[in-house]
Every structure is written in C-alpha cells, then in structure tokens.
Length: 301
Ligand SMILES: [Zn+2]
Ligand SMILES: [Zn+2]
Image: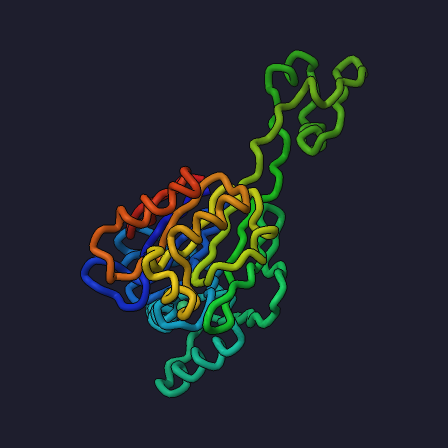
C-alpha cells in the first residue's frame, strides 16, 4: 500500500501548500481521497494516471476538500473518459455536481455513480475480493466521514521447491494457495504447511479529516497500520480547535496512542503557523511514531 499526499493544508490554496487531497494505492486500486482545489495539477505533477482513478471518496462538503472535484470530472470528459466514475460523499454531493453540469450544459459522456452517505455509524461502502472500505463518522461542523481502507488477507504463497519435491500437479495449485492439502505424484497427502508460506499480513489505513477530538472513533481505527489525523492547530489554540470542530497536534497524537495504531501522520495544518516543527514536537510527546504530512510526500504502508 502506498499513500501519496497531494495536499495537506487547511482552508485556502496558497503558494506554500495545497488543500486536502491524497491518492491511496491499494492492491490494484488507485483511490482518490478528498479533492481540494489544485488536485488535478498535483495529480499531473506526481504522475498519477487519470484513467486509473475510478473511485473518489469525499469526507465532507467544505470547499478545501471537494472544490477540485467539478474540475476533475470535467477534465475526465475532455480526455474522452468512457469508464464510470464512483463518487462517495455526503448526501447533497450529487445535487451540487449535477447543478454545475446542468447550468454549463456540460454533461459527461461517461456515467457518474454517486454513493451518497448519511449514516452516523460506520458502514462498509466498497468491497471486492482484495479490499474493503468503511466510513469513520467524524465530529465536525458539517456531516463528515473519515475512511478506513483495509486489505483482505492474501492467498498463501506457494513454496515452489516443496511443490517440485513432492511432484504436485499444477491443477492443485489454486486450492493449495487457498489452504487445502496437496496430493503427491505417488498419491500421498501432503499437508498444506509443507507446501506454502504465510502470506504477508493485510494492511490498513485510516483517514480522519476534518474532525474535533473525539474518542468514539477509537475502537473503529484500533490497530490500523497508518492513521492520518488532522492537526489544524497547536495546543495554544485548543479552544479555537474546539470551536471550529478541529484538533490540535496533541489531540491527534492522543487518538493515535489510545487507538494503538502503528504510525501517525499529521496534516490539515493551518497556515497561521510558520514553524511546522512545532506540530511534531507537540505530538511526539504523546505518540513518538509520528510524521508530518507534506505535499508530494509518499508513505509506504
Ligand atoms: Zn478542511
Ligand atoms: Zn472542514
């Protein structure tokens, strides 16, 4: 799994930073998470193929998280896209996008499939044989969801040396990878553990932005391999964070610690702070395995 930070700054786009957007490479998927202004340019800059984006997840309808979406939809049309595009986001997102397309008489030639969200409890919104995605209801000024991306367990790895040794016919490989025992050329049963390796542990990524400090999500993100949590403010602005439905770096780290995640990335920084190191200094007191998001930075999970 690989996470590309395209933008990780709060509120307005600036010369120094882009509003929120990320690309998650998970198994064969390229998922776009939030789509602030400038996302298209960032996608180009970081060489993400537009044609591989089939699913876009929007956390909430504040402009710094979705104002890039109408432009991206329009560009897909200009590029001659034919494949359907799935958009997951709060109820109302369909109305907003369709209004823009209607007033400009610029309907897409490809199908837009909206998955409007309104639940206030976690729900699974995407699943295939390799991956599943669920919502993480967040506490913000408007209806907001984070997202939990989970890999499913891979098949067992085939031990080619053992398979050759027992002269196992290729016809059994599929079932052996699923955990079944094999049959040697002489008709003897060979137990699965002698023929396979354990698959790598499935990984998970939790995205939580924007949100106030809220412990109700802890159970749901517990043990995640990576947590991206917003840290708009420093503790000196704790009351402002509370008032605006945002978190401080220290609060983000406290959530990471209580949830027992493996690693934390801080993002959604207010542009009021010149020295970004202060976020990290504040967070590592609570949770040492913290890193700062940065536009263009890539994290391997
Ligand atoms: Zn925001
Ligand atoms: Zn917001």
